[in-house]
Structures are given as C-alpha cells and as structure tokens.
Length: 314
Image (cartoon, rainbow, N blue to C red):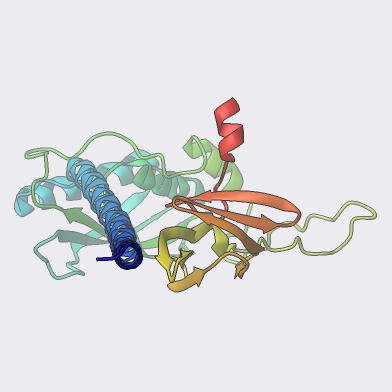
C-alpha cells in the first residue's frame, strides 16, 4: 500500500471515528436530559405525597379534637345529659323554659349522629342574650339551626323558639359526661359585652349599622384590586438538547401551559415579560425590565438566583 493510500485510509477512519463519536455524544446528552426530566417528575410526585401525608396528619389531629368535643357515644346517655344541660343553661341565664321536645333533624350516618331539641321559652332580652352567649361559648359540637324571637305576653318579655342539634362522633372520648371547656369562636370576651351591645337595639326591627362619614377631602375611589401573577407558578421543569441547541421547558401550573424556548425567544407569563438570553444545563438567563434574571432548574420565574460569579464571591 502506497503512502497516499495509507493517508487516505487514515483520513476515512478519522472521519468515521468523529461521526461515531458525535452520534454517541448526542445519545448521551439525550439520555442525560431524559434522566433529568424523570428526576424532576419523581421529585414532584414525592412533594405531592408529602403534602398528602401532611394533610392526612392534620385531618387526624382535627378529628381527635372533634372527638373530644363530641357528646358521649352512647346515644341514650348523650340525649339525657344534653337535655339537662340545656335546662341548666336556660335557668342560669334567667330564661323560663316552657317546653323542650326531642327533634331528630338529621338521619345518622357512619361519620356522625345528631341529637336535636326544640325549645320554647320566654325571658327578657338580657336573659336571651346571656343564654345565646352561654350556648356558643361552650366547646360542644352544637348549633342553633332555627331561632324565632317574638314579643312576649308581658311587657319587656320575649317569646323564644330554638331548634338545636348537637353531634355524636364515633370514638368520642367522653363516656358518661358532656365535654368540658370553652370555645374561642366568639368575638367579645363576656356575656355583658353582648348585653351592652344588643339591649340598646330594637330587636324586632331591621338593624342599620351607623354610617361612618369619610374624612374631608377623601377621594371616593375603590383601591385597585391586586393582580394575580401566574409567573409565580411558572417553573423551569427541564433543559434538554434539541438539534445541538439547549431548550428550556417552562410549565405554568395554574394554566397547564407548556413553554419550550431557545435562546432569543420571548417569554410572557402573567405579569412577567422577558427574553431568553442564554440557556445552561441547569440555568436559564432571562432579560426583563432592564434586569438580568438567573432562573435555576426547578425554580419559578419569580425565584431568580444569584449569577455564578456573584455566588462565588458570597
């Protein structure tokens, strides 16, 4: 074989090696990008599982709290104790109880059962207010489903009709007594605060709150409503190589929109407008409002990271 033939054969072999190496490098990059995408998807599933687990833990904690506020699980015991509790509350408030009748309003389910009573009574406005405060100050799982107040037969007296129901939950922690404790659902600290606020009104007419006059010179304009920014939920979920160029994948979780952009492409999501300056294997650089933003893989468009040079100095 002549020297020329040897050189030609070596050149062909070199070209073959370069071509084969390019193919292998391309496949390697594709495999690497696919692995990164799979890793991001797995991380997202893990985050969802952790969120579901935390929600379940909070739900169990809430259920345990409700079980502590439930009437006793034995319905007969609960019915007797609750009836006597209502009688005592009326007496303590100064409301005269005329009648109390069992009123089963809701069919029992596997999740809970209800005990209901219809109460007819009469008393002064102060006494009725004190009774309502005492009822809602209790921590029991109970509510007034209907209330009717009318002028009574005697001056200064009100005729009162209440329909009440309380819950019995499976696994209730009290067996032979009603749950104790108080609720923090009321805005005012004591019954006297409500008495002062309510007894000065005519309860049998529609309540009209006092009208506050605007200060002199104040403009009668509504404050602007805050705009919802989808860019807070637009995440860089992948960076892959396509035809020798890096391409960034941006997922807008609020709209399920998928953006696939190269360097030089414009990006507009919600209140964000910008342009892709460059794309690195784990970073997208965007230019927005005369500011250069470095968005890391897995971060949103509103979570700009420090540039590599700045990060090295810190």
